[in-house]
Amino acid sequence: MPRESKKSKVARVTEFCHRMDELYGSEPSALDWHTPFELVIAVLLSAQTTDAAVNAVTPDLFGRWPDAASMACADVAEVADVIHRLGFFNSKSQHCVGCAQMIVADYGGEVPRTMDELVRLPGVGRKTANIVLNKAFGIVEGIAVDTHVFRIAQRMGLTTAKTPLDAEKDLLAVIPQELWGGVNSQWIRFGRATCTARQAKCETCPCDDLCPKRPVRHGAGQAKKRPRRKKG
Image (cartoon, rainbow, N blue to C red; front, side, top):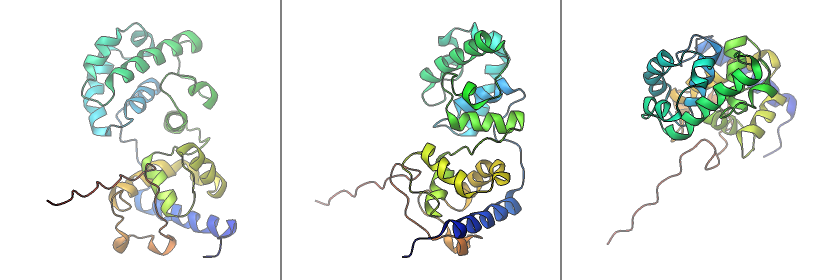
């Protein structure tokens, strides 16, 4: 198979993004939040957990500790008790308190507005920072690559990267900057509805003509198949 030119790849992913925008448009975050601080904490909590599960615990969490100043003084064990239904609640509770303490100590209680400052916060990586910048401040500096974006990017032949961080670099190189803002939320919805992890629904996909259907690397957005048990 001949190697695809960058010009061809850019044209293909640009059309894909336009179709995603037609399908899903601009919708609010699936996570419930009202302030930048609440968004930071909600996205931090959403790792390895559904948005619905996070939304079920944040009313109590933010009711008790509504801002960085109050959460900075919280007992980690009490925070863990509130979010205990979430995966990795022990480490997440430590990150919540540590994040709040750094926001208070280093940024006067206000969530910072730059990538470099956000990724300093405990529990906040580049994916979380991209979401916060985009949704809370309208700043589009990159693309938040989660498991759905990672999977779609691989199947679309847009990256062969082994990590989300490297995949983001590949996506930024071929997706026009004016389209970066909608990628995360739109591709997530597409990944849940059509380009699913176990088996993509190519027969009903509105972008089937744009996709080379490259294989997804195990551990990069696709669940490994369970080995079959031997009979007898």
